[in-house]
Image (cartoon, rainbow, N blue to C red; front, side, top):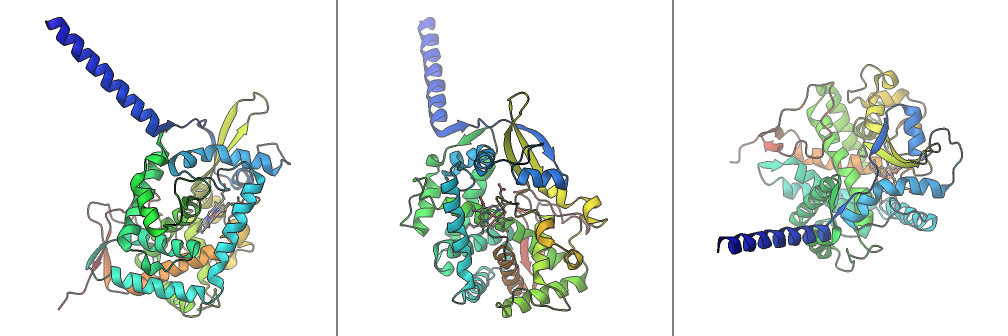
Length: 410
Ligand code: HEM
């Protein structure tokens, strides 16, 4: 009797384990990308890796470059079901995606596009600030996502419910973090995210590789929100008060004269604020490339640590770790020095104006709404590091920080 009971328990355990493993193998995929073998933080090697050149290799074709980028990005295909410039090895598909992105990013430059986006943002910020205490990260994520969706899919940002944008942003963050582990959850299991996407973009199919709206959302939104969050904190809450006043004035001026992107306030350009935010907080902190070792034939992945390179004191001076937009006033070739948008042949189509404008627009609309009426409250988070030490760049950092209203309601 005891033997048959033990046998039943054993069979049940084997069955449960087998079912668990079966479900897991269907819902997850192991990353087969080789682990990173070398990380470089010097400018020469970072540029070489951005250009997708193996060491001692001068000339290589675009096809090789695409292959060296696509392999480390395969996790994005598993996790987000994307097929775009970052994951393809086809020159034709990459060129098509790049051209589509470039033309989408031109849209706000015609038909008063920037003015309309600014008005939309103003009203979204006003609605969000009706509460006295607001979590900052979900606010920045939801505003950035709604504005990005408006640009990419020609939508009215106000028509996208803030709650849907917040949930979608939070899903994207969770999936991104999970995709960094060895076992990656498969995109087709993310049914809540599909539902949210379909509710905003009913005519697209998230499960169709070519149509999946994440193809565009990922490179655009994922890069923007993190740099906007940090730019906003730097401009409003860190640094000497006189500098903060100048930065805020310059941003407000440029938003009221959107035709001239670089309005001068005491010879100060808002592009320098965006550039400095991108220098200190490059959203793509590391860029990975796959190469085959010519001697051994073994595959290896090399990383360009853009964040470390752009904070290097030997290149940027003793104040390299301080947010100081003025430094750009004396830099000769700013486009070459800023690595945050990558380099040829893969330099980001947003590098030419669009990226700067979006950062300034979002930072500006938030700072207009917040004015002098809110302070930061840290909850269980640590306070901000002291001036001269960069803010944390982690994806989960500052998740408990709140904008706390200073005025009491009468
Ligand atoms: C501040 C915002 C942005 C930053 C910092 C940024 C950063 C980058 C970086 C570092 C690369 C090079 C990747 C590599 O070499 O593997 C890149 C490429 C690219 N980015 Fe962005 N990006 C931003 C915004 C956008 C937006 C809004 C879009 C719109 C869809 C976009 C679309 C692309 C595309 C299509 C490429 C690939 C270009 C190619 O293959 O030639 N990016 N971006």
